[in-house]
Length: 224
Image 1 (cartoon, helix red, strand yellow):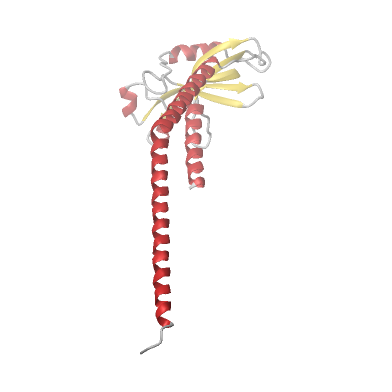
Image 2: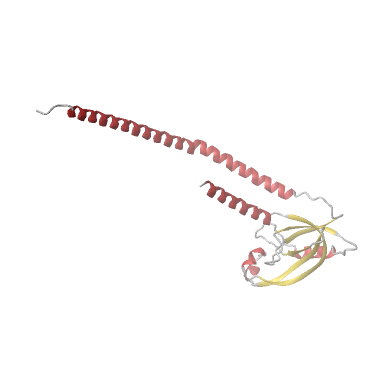
Protein backbone atom coordinates (compact mmCIF):
# COMPACT_ATOMS: atom_id res chain seq x y z
CA UNK A 1 0.00 0.00 0.00
CA UNK A 2 2.92 2.35 0.65
CA UNK A 3 4.06 2.10 -3.00
CA UNK A 4 0.51 2.68 -4.25
CA UNK A 5 0.20 5.76 -2.05
CA UNK A 6 3.46 7.31 -3.24
CA UNK A 7 2.69 6.43 -6.86
CA UNK A 8 -0.67 8.23 -6.66
CA UNK A 9 0.93 11.24 -4.97
CA UNK A 10 3.69 11.37 -7.61
CA UNK A 11 1.11 11.26 -10.43
CA UNK A 12 -0.92 14.04 -8.80
CA UNK A 13 2.23 16.15 -8.35
CA UNK A 14 3.17 15.57 -12.00
CA UNK A 15 -0.29 16.62 -13.19
CA UNK A 16 -0.22 19.78 -11.06
CA UNK A 17 3.29 20.64 -12.23
CA UNK A 18 2.33 20.16 -15.89
CA UNK A 19 -0.79 22.28 -15.48
CA UNK A 20 1.12 25.12 -13.84
CA UNK A 21 4.01 24.90 -16.31
CA UNK A 22 1.60 25.17 -19.24
CA UNK A 23 -0.61 27.89 -17.77
CA UNK A 24 1.73 30.28 -15.94
CA UNK A 25 3.45 33.02 -17.97
CA UNK A 26 6.97 32.42 -19.25
CA UNK A 27 9.44 34.92 -20.67
CA UNK A 28 11.83 34.44 -23.60
CA UNK A 29 14.46 36.88 -24.84
CA UNK A 30 14.32 36.66 -28.64
CA UNK A 31 14.91 38.45 -31.91
CA UNK A 32 11.84 38.73 -34.18
CA UNK A 33 12.61 37.72 -37.77
CA UNK A 34 9.16 37.42 -39.36
CA UNK A 35 5.40 37.35 -38.83
CA UNK A 36 2.83 35.54 -40.95
CA UNK A 37 -0.69 34.15 -41.02
CA UNK A 38 -1.64 30.55 -41.79
CA UNK A 39 -4.84 28.52 -41.81
CA UNK A 40 -4.82 25.76 -39.19
CA UNK A 41 -6.98 22.64 -39.00
CA UNK A 42 -8.66 22.24 -35.61
CA UNK A 43 -10.47 18.96 -36.11
CA UNK A 44 -8.39 16.61 -33.94
CA UNK A 45 -7.45 16.24 -30.28
CA UNK A 46 -4.72 18.91 -30.52
CA UNK A 47 -7.52 21.50 -30.58
CA UNK A 48 -7.10 21.76 -26.80
CA UNK A 49 -3.78 23.54 -27.40
CA UNK A 50 -5.45 26.30 -29.48
CA UNK A 51 -7.46 29.19 -28.15
CA UNK A 52 -11.25 29.35 -28.29
CA UNK A 53 -11.80 33.05 -27.63
CA UNK A 54 -15.42 33.17 -28.86
CA UNK A 55 -18.37 30.97 -29.75
CA UNK A 56 -17.69 31.10 -33.47
CA UNK A 57 -14.12 29.81 -33.24
CA UNK A 58 -15.35 27.04 -30.99
CA UNK A 59 -17.45 25.61 -33.83
CA UNK A 60 -15.01 26.02 -36.74
CA UNK A 61 -12.88 23.08 -37.90
CA UNK A 62 -10.18 25.46 -39.17
CA UNK A 63 -9.29 29.15 -38.98
CA UNK A 64 -6.51 31.63 -39.78
CA UNK A 65 -3.90 31.97 -37.04
CA UNK A 66 -1.16 34.59 -36.83
CA UNK A 67 2.39 33.52 -35.97
CA UNK A 68 5.57 35.26 -34.80
CA UNK A 69 8.90 33.75 -35.88
CA UNK A 70 11.87 34.46 -33.63
CA UNK A 71 15.45 33.46 -32.86
CA UNK A 72 16.46 32.89 -29.24
CA UNK A 73 19.67 34.13 -27.64
CA UNK A 74 21.35 30.76 -28.28
CA UNK A 75 20.48 30.89 -31.99
CA UNK A 76 17.55 28.44 -31.96
CA UNK A 77 14.26 29.14 -33.75
CA UNK A 78 11.10 29.65 -31.72
CA UNK A 79 7.66 30.19 -33.23
CA UNK A 80 4.73 31.61 -31.27
CA UNK A 81 1.08 31.71 -32.19
CA UNK A 82 -0.73 34.99 -31.65
CA UNK A 83 -4.33 34.31 -30.60
CA UNK A 84 -6.82 36.08 -28.38
CA UNK A 85 -7.77 34.24 -25.22
CA UNK A 86 -10.87 36.32 -24.62
CA UNK A 87 -12.73 35.34 -21.47
CA UNK A 88 -11.76 31.66 -21.70
CA UNK A 89 -8.96 29.71 -20.02
CA UNK A 90 -6.20 30.52 -19.25
CA UNK A 91 -7.37 33.88 -17.88
CA UNK A 92 -5.04 36.25 -19.71
CA UNK A 93 -7.98 38.26 -21.11
CA UNK A 94 -6.08 38.94 -24.31
CA UNK A 95 -8.03 40.82 -26.99
CA UNK A 96 -5.20 42.65 -28.81
CA UNK A 97 -3.96 40.10 -31.35
CA UNK A 98 -3.73 42.71 -34.11
CA UNK A 99 -1.86 45.14 -31.88
CA UNK A 100 0.60 42.49 -30.74
CA UNK A 101 1.25 41.46 -34.34
CA UNK A 102 1.98 45.10 -35.21
CA UNK A 103 4.41 45.41 -32.29
CA UNK A 104 6.17 42.25 -33.41
CA UNK A 105 6.43 43.59 -36.97
CA UNK A 106 7.98 46.78 -35.64
CA UNK A 107 10.63 44.76 -33.75
CA UNK A 108 11.79 42.69 -36.73
CA UNK A 109 15.54 42.75 -37.21
CA UNK A 110 18.48 40.96 -38.82
CA UNK A 111 21.44 39.08 -37.40
CA UNK A 112 23.74 41.95 -38.33
CA UNK A 113 21.57 44.60 -36.62
CA UNK A 114 19.60 42.73 -33.94
CA UNK A 115 16.72 44.12 -31.89
CA UNK A 116 16.05 42.10 -28.78
CA UNK A 117 12.66 41.68 -27.20
CA UNK A 118 11.00 39.79 -24.36
CA UNK A 119 8.04 37.65 -25.37
CA UNK A 120 5.64 36.75 -22.58
CA UNK A 121 3.75 33.57 -23.41
CA UNK A 122 2.10 30.47 -22.04
CA UNK A 123 1.97 26.94 -23.43
CA UNK A 124 4.46 24.58 -25.01
CA UNK A 125 6.23 24.18 -28.34
CA UNK A 126 6.17 20.68 -29.81
CA UNK A 127 7.11 20.10 -33.43
CA UNK A 128 5.84 16.51 -33.45
CA UNK A 129 2.20 17.43 -32.88
CA UNK A 130 2.54 21.03 -34.15
CA UNK A 131 1.58 22.99 -31.06
CA UNK A 132 2.85 26.48 -30.31
CA UNK A 133 3.03 28.69 -27.22
CA UNK A 134 0.67 31.65 -27.34
CA UNK A 135 2.36 35.06 -27.12
CA UNK A 136 0.45 37.45 -24.87
CA UNK A 137 2.88 40.39 -24.79
CA UNK A 138 6.09 41.64 -26.36
CA UNK A 139 8.39 44.49 -25.37
CA UNK A 140 11.83 45.66 -26.51
CA UNK A 141 14.90 45.28 -24.26
CA UNK A 142 18.42 46.64 -24.47
CA UNK A 143 20.20 43.34 -25.03
CA UNK A 144 20.09 39.56 -24.83
CA UNK A 145 21.49 39.46 -21.28
CA UNK A 146 18.56 41.29 -19.69
CA UNK A 147 17.47 39.93 -16.30
CA UNK A 148 13.81 38.99 -15.99
CA UNK A 149 12.14 38.45 -12.60
CA UNK A 150 8.86 36.48 -12.95
CA UNK A 151 6.91 38.46 -10.36
CA UNK A 152 3.54 37.07 -11.45
CA UNK A 153 4.71 33.49 -11.03
CA UNK A 154 6.27 34.28 -7.66
CA UNK A 155 3.04 35.83 -6.38
CA UNK A 156 0.82 33.03 -7.72
CA UNK A 157 3.05 30.21 -6.46
CA UNK A 158 3.39 31.89 -3.05
CA UNK A 159 -0.39 32.21 -2.86
CA UNK A 160 -0.87 28.55 -3.82
CA UNK A 161 1.75 27.47 -1.28
CA UNK A 162 -0.05 29.47 1.42
CA UNK A 163 -3.33 27.76 0.50
CA UNK A 164 -1.65 24.34 0.56
CA UNK A 165 -0.10 24.97 3.98
CA UNK A 166 -3.44 26.23 5.30
CA UNK A 167 -5.23 23.12 4.05
CA UNK A 168 -2.50 20.93 5.56
CA UNK A 169 -2.81 22.71 8.94
CA UNK A 170 -6.62 22.39 8.85
CA UNK A 171 -6.35 18.70 8.00
CA UNK A 172 -3.89 18.05 10.84
CA UNK A 173 -6.14 19.91 13.26
CA UNK A 174 -9.18 17.97 12.04
CA UNK A 175 -7.29 14.69 12.35
CA UNK A 176 -6.10 15.48 15.87
CA UNK A 177 -9.58 16.50 17.02
CA UNK A 178 -11.78 14.01 15.17
CA UNK A 179 -9.91 11.08 13.68
CA UNK A 180 -7.15 10.36 16.20
CA UNK A 181 -9.58 10.11 19.19
CA UNK A 182 -11.75 7.68 17.24
CA UNK A 183 -8.71 5.59 16.34
CA UNK A 184 -7.57 5.64 19.96
CA UNK A 185 -11.03 4.51 21.09
CA UNK A 186 -10.99 1.75 18.50
CA UNK A 187 -7.50 0.71 19.62
CA UNK A 188 -8.55 0.71 23.27
CA UNK A 189 -11.67 -1.29 22.44
CA UNK A 190 -9.59 -3.78 20.48
CA UNK A 191 -7.14 -4.07 23.35
CA UNK A 192 -10.07 -4.70 25.66
CA UNK A 193 -11.35 -7.41 23.34
CA UNK A 194 -7.91 -9.02 23.27
CA UNK A 195 -7.63 -8.85 27.05
CA UNK A 196 -11.07 -10.43 27.49
CA UNK A 197 -10.17 -13.10 24.92
CA UNK A 198 -6.93 -13.85 26.76
CA UNK A 199 -8.78 -14.01 30.08
CA UNK A 200 -11.39 -16.34 28.57
CA UNK A 201 -8.59 -18.51 27.17
CA UNK A 202 -6.91 -18.63 30.56
CA UNK A 203 -10.19 -19.62 32.20
CA UNK A 204 -10.80 -22.29 29.56
CA UNK A 205 -7.28 -23.67 30.03
CA UNK A 206 -7.85 -23.66 33.81
CA UNK A 207 -11.13 -25.55 33.49
CA UNK A 208 -9.55 -28.05 31.10
CA UNK A 209 -6.64 -28.53 33.45
CA UNK A 210 -8.94 -29.21 36.39
CA UNK A 211 -11.02 -31.56 34.28
CA UNK A 212 -7.99 -33.56 33.15
CA UNK A 213 -6.75 -33.66 36.74
CA UNK A 214 -10.09 -35.02 37.87
CA UNK A 215 -9.91 -37.69 35.16
CA UNK A 216 -6.45 -38.57 36.42
CA UNK A 217 -7.82 -39.27 39.89
CA UNK A 218 -10.18 -41.83 38.45
CA UNK A 219 -7.39 -43.66 36.64
CA UNK A 220 -5.65 -44.40 39.91
CA UNK A 221 -8.70 -45.87 41.76
CA UNK A 222 -9.05 -49.73 41.91
CA UNK A 223 -12.16 -51.31 40.43
CA UNK A 224 -14.60 -53.12 42.78
